[in-house]
Length: 153
Image (cartoon, rainbow, N blue to C red; front, side):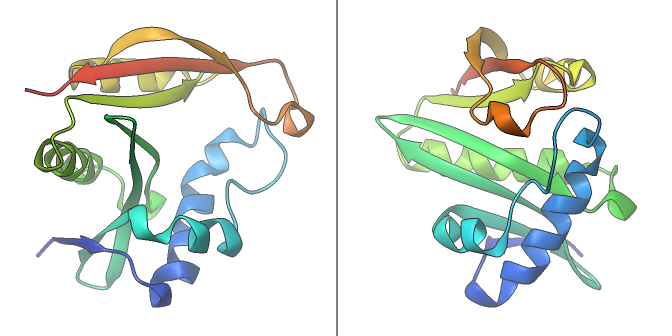
């Protein structure tokens, strides 16, 4: 059985593990881990976790600011990917935004991860711009962010 809940302080080590495992696919263009315990603790109030038998299988961070929602990272334990887990977390993010009166939801995709674009477009996200990668010293190759937005109804 799946359940969604807000992350708590005891979840920090598992969130760090899952996020870093899920983002290993980005090792070809960026140096280092995606996150660490300090960053997760700083953002703790915005993390949702997906739990199933055996523990946490995924998480997402949501921030609501200036009337807009933003989510990322979205991470599913690589051993448990598939089966609608990412979709369940995105649905929860959208529901939280609607409950807060937010009508726009944003996300970023790294330009060298084009395989993610069709997934988000199927969920109704549309290209809204580009932005520079925030930590260019971590890059192994040139890239930038592609910005996507969705109007929530």
